Image (cartoon, rainbow, N blue to C red; front, side):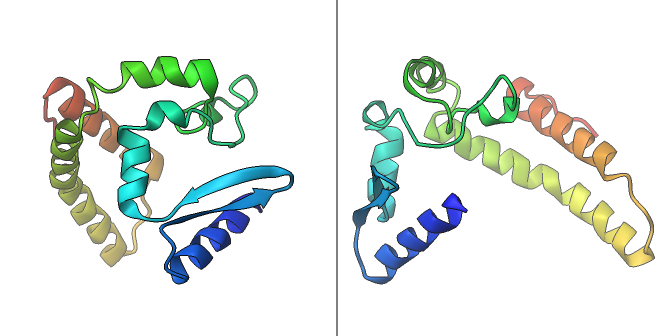
Length: 144
């Protein structure tokens, strides 16, 4: 529900040609950057000024909610400080190239199964794909 609220606000600001804007969500003011350059500046160079994102976070009951984009304050600053050396812009571009190249065999395999109307164990396929990506990006080892 809240994501639709923010999405509508973002799209309305964009439609009106604003580079950024703000709304109140309940009683809390929310800044909404629209322009790609502003978003990039916030994410890359001004990230220390935006440690809280107002998202649901409950790592004890929902471990997947405790990722970098959700966590806040001290924990966010600690994780963020560890990330830059691993995830520079150049390294992310290289990882994207690797992932793009590695997805082709999986796409071909899915096409074959779709053409034949065959059942496919997607969990196993997703696990293999994830392992292949991690091996290639983190260790530089490309598997089959």
